[in-house]
Image 1 (cartoon, rainbow, N blue to C red):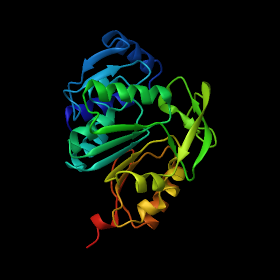
Image 2 (image 1 turned 180 degrees about the vertical axis):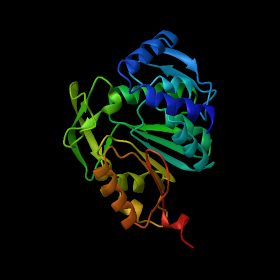
Image 3 (image 1 turned 120 degrees about the vertical axis):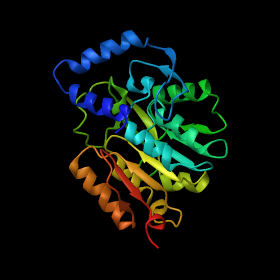
Image 4 (image 1 turned 90 degrees about the vertical axis):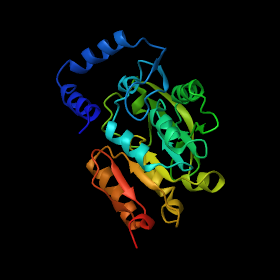
Length: 264
């Protein structure tokens, strides 16, 4: 375990103690001013410029946010690959993906939250990655439609209101209308993905149902999916196993390899 992983895992435990997360957030606001531009110093995103906002995880500014996930994305993607960052939030993995795929590849960041999309756009422009990265301000679902999206104060937990999301404690905040698309439809009309990361606060099953053709294709992508409950994890794994994917042993997220990568 490297130093970034050690610090991150210890912090996850400490932050569960009463009052510690608030103390940590306060300290980080002092160290990193809101709306300031910093240089990320650690991890696969090291050297990138980063626009820091207090509504996002300050671990991103330091460069040690979810280090195992960051490293997996960086090491799996190759020059020329296409990375779909679904639920891109502030664009942290978007930048890491851009570094891995290089100028011959492409990164597409999906996020329906206007603040997130604007922040991702800032991160891309700060690092002059417009040729590699683009933003789709849409949500993914099992059909093309318009749905309501709830945006809590901590917008990392923005979620479609038709989705049961018991892991989200803060149910207050703004509700907006967002366009939903099917991943199958998008991939047919745009660059076909090599790797898809999905973290969309409980809507993962609907997104996978809308990606049936993608999952069953001979060019099916590597997947990395967050499941916010044991029931959701089971449903996601059932869909992937039925499509012939192999589930690997990876902490906190579902990492799945398509048949072409694990069958002779």
